[in-house]
Image (cartoon, rainbow, N blue to C red):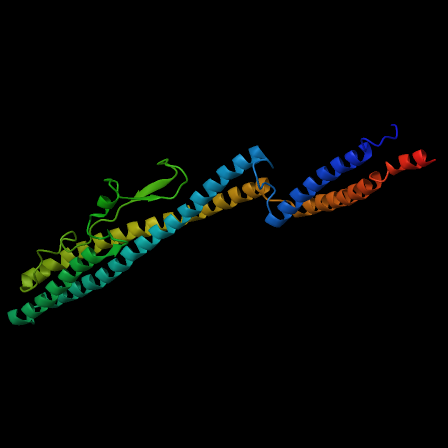
Length: 283
């Protein structure tokens, strides 16, 4: 290579190497400060596309977990109301048992019947008043809120496959009429004796509803566990694609930093080379 003054090729080479090292240094700084290996599509277009799909699914799965927790809260609300109804049924059974014996007169049985009717009305009131976010739970109309005869739709999956992403819950009516209590009257001894078996049937019906609710709660617990594991594993996979390996990137950062410093030093030296020509001219 000849000694020329119009073009300083050494300086141009040093400048090009410095630009490249500086770009890599900037990229390493960006990755280390953000914690991400992929900050723009230019970093890894395919990796960005895959990770964005994963992030979308992870967000949906996490929301699905929250949906399942909300469904558990709904069911626990219904179960709590049924527990109160259970207390009313026990009192009704007690009153019927009391009125069924011959040691009371008609006036006393009428007093017992007044409380009996009050307990029955309270059962219906509780069933009609029990709601969760405006959804009636115990009056038999829960399916109206889902627009489906299958019951209340609980959606938790990232897509809309019936076998994988949602299922329905049904809660039967727990009003006094649905439990077969509306026609009971314990103002007479015979009526009280007939009420005893009817109340037992009502207790069984109520317990069946509670058993269904318990099964739904347990199923949702399993669903939450499965969704949480799925989201966790997917998050780990997304992290391997998108997150920066700090140890590796720090090594690259130091390497590029040294190269940039060396390129600057060589650029300074290269800029003095043309001055050698002045020595020859002056000689």
